[in-house]
Length: 294
Image (cartoon, rainbow, N blue to C red; front, side, top):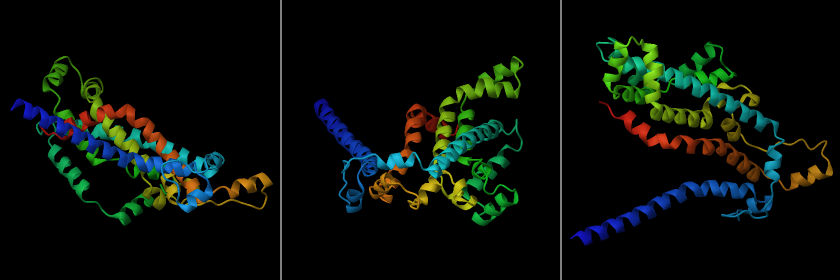
């Protein structure tokens, strides 16, 4: 009986490993294919013969990107948006979650505000009222339209609220006996203990602000103000040929929208791929503890 159980568990482990490897390949292959296309020549990409390896290897698309002022500008706007947006999301989430983690005896309106948050998460005012509100505040075509329009992520607030509520009450009581105030307890006790869930919502915010493109499309009036993902949505090779040299004409003949766009998409993936490994160790722990209500 023990042997059968051991054999069955080994078979299950092997099948599970094969399944996970299959899922990993499904996730990695599109990224690898995009890289292969970006490193291939114009004819191979147009003919659709690029598979897992570049055909006619060259770096023309990447050298062109380095001189594309619009791409570099949109990349900088996205970096600015991520920094400002993530910082704002973090501050607002913590400041909202801390009082909402208290009991009704400590904060009488706690349940009212929680229900308002849940209602806003399930229902919203619609696209037109949202657009009119942003326009009324004079935020159109500014970085603050991209940052403030998504300043409060209700799901993040709920995660942090539940994490705070699961922390031992004895620590807070001991701090109160020692004369600690609310700000001291938040900064010196709650935030250090909540690193897993705070790292998780930080990762969520970074990915959201980096990948979101619709706000840029609706709230920005000119292409010069587009964040990176909005710019990529509008990709097209537009080059002035009136004052080109012979070498530039040769370079243009080897360039195509398909290879250039693949290179831009791959470069846009790099920041998130670099950040994720440093925060992923907190991810499961933060989600698990933050999603369980005491």
